[in-house]
Amino acid sequence: MQPISYSRAADTATAVAAVSADPTSDFLAGGTTEIDLLRQNVLHPRRLVDINHLPLAGVEPTPEGGLRIGALARMSEVAASPLVRERFPLICQALELGASAQLRHMASMGGNLLQRVRCSYYRDARSPCNKRDPGTGCSAREGFSRGHAVLGASEHCIAAHPSDVAVALMAVDARVHTLGPQGERAYAFDDFFLLPGDSPHREHPMEHGELITAIEVPAMPLARHSLYLKVRDRESYEFALTSVAAALSLVDGTIADVRVALGGVATKPWRARRAEDFLIGARAIPENFDQAARAELAAARPTPMNAFKVELTRRAVVRALQTLTGDGTGSPA
Ligand code: SF4
Image 1 (spheres, rainbow, N blue to C red):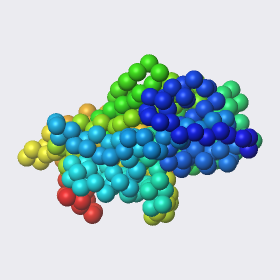
Image 2 (image 1 turned 135 degrees about the horizontal axis):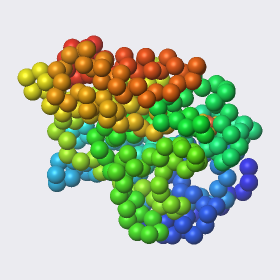
Image 3 (image 1 turned 90 degrees about the vertical axis):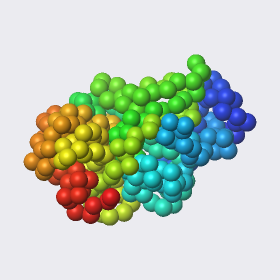
């Protein structure tokens, strides 16, 4: 490993200026992804600017009834917030089902959104990987792809986005606030995550030196009746094979409003808009949940190794919606 210089910025603007001015530098927050990738010889920054002491933590209510989550709030802090638990239970559930207790105490919310893929080829510096080394090829396409994406993939990359909480935030129309060399910006959540296309190394629209400062969650009464369902190979400390974030309101047995997002099956946190379009105005019955899931998954392009995810996701969507409407197992509300 090459030598790395380390510094602590005095304030947010100084941190942004320091990283912007040096293309070999990077921010250091919780470090739960960054340090792993340094050790694995995947990332090679020459300078790390520690931002952990900057005043970007905390969870606050907004006057409109939403939330403002500081980029440096730890996953465990947000999961334990009574405010989040009351207004957005799907966010708490997604956080509590992610990583391990130790990692949740360290990992920041901003870092969670920027965490890198878990594709084993990406993390093996000897394997061709377009995301790590553009133009070298995608080892997963002909290799081991059981955990990879079935939605949003390209011929250049099929890695699944690994975050749980980003799926919940996608369902509730969150926005990402940043400070960069050009000043403050705000991104709609869907715009903040890029599809791989022919440039999978570019995962976000931010420029070098741009720093996430907060995540804003708009008021959404619907989200008080919401859940995050995660399906994985073992019950703790494991990434999703598939996951569903859902919120729903009913009027006389008809779906008045609904949000559905999928995780573990797509190259970005996946808003299931086709499923939502099918469900709004439909009767809340399992047959319609099934049709909605099929409508969303019609675009799936699995590999022979991960084709099971299509059926697993169809079942997970039905189960999540049945649970929310009081007709499934383990009703959360
Ligand atoms: Fe790299 Fe993406 Fe292919 Fe994995 S799926 S080897 S991350 S290009």
